[in-house]
Each structure stands twice: as C-alpha cells, then as structure tokens.
Image (tube, rainbow, N blue to C red; front, side, top):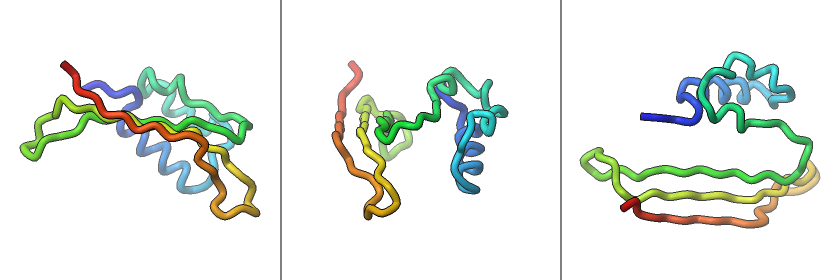
Length: 99
C-alpha cells in the first residue's frame, strides 16, 4: 500500500502538535524522508487554508471498495475573540467510482 506520508510519520507529527503549535518546519525535520507527500506540507502566515482528504471505502468483509471519496474545505481562521474561531468558506464532498 502506498501512502504520501508514512502512517508513523503522521502519528509523530500529531504527537508534536498535541504538545503545542508547530511554529517551524525544523520541528518536523525527523520526518523529511517519510514520503513524497512531506514536501507538500508548509507553514504559512495566511489565515485561509485548504484542507483536503481522500479515502477509499472498505466493504464489510474488509476488501477495498471501488468507491472513493474526496472532501476538501477552504477555511478562514479568525482571531481568538471569535467563537467559533474559523469560518468555512467553501466545502466540496465528492464520491466517484474507479472503473
């Protein structure tokens, strides 16, 4: 199975993030060789970001379905004086079958 970032690298990045915000890519230096997807990670001062995930569903017997689902959102992060502290600007939810 091929992943863009190794599962163990994701777990490590989440562990770092649970201790506080990631302020520098140097904090993630240990994961640079974790897969081709790492080069797509970045820290930006922008208040708008696009979050995206794609997954292939599994059948009840554990085999992979031919149905794939992709979800993305464009999110504007607001200041701490707002509740909630984000606003969803655009949302896409797509499902498609591989033939």
